[in-house]
Length: 68
Image 1: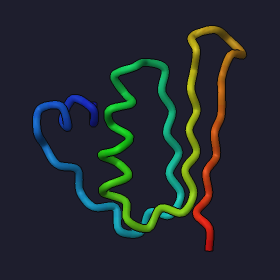
Image 2: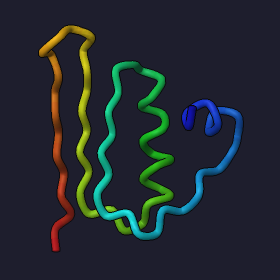
Image 3: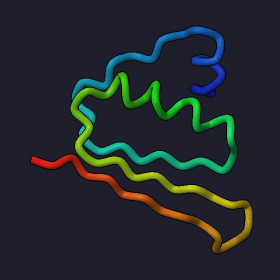
Image 4: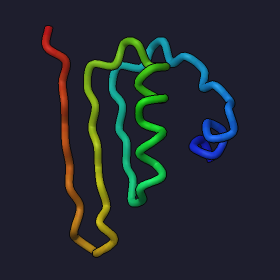
């Protein structure tokens, strides 16, 4: 739903208190949403990405933490 809103030009609110963002996707279109989420989340310190390859048990995880 959020990706459709962004696609049609709606701006996401600023998530000013968000420090940990988990992003899960199973399709190519959803990747366009990630930069929008990061732009609106200035305090994110940890980003977790889960990619589902469409097969049970075939998931890939990435965790990125901001250096302090």
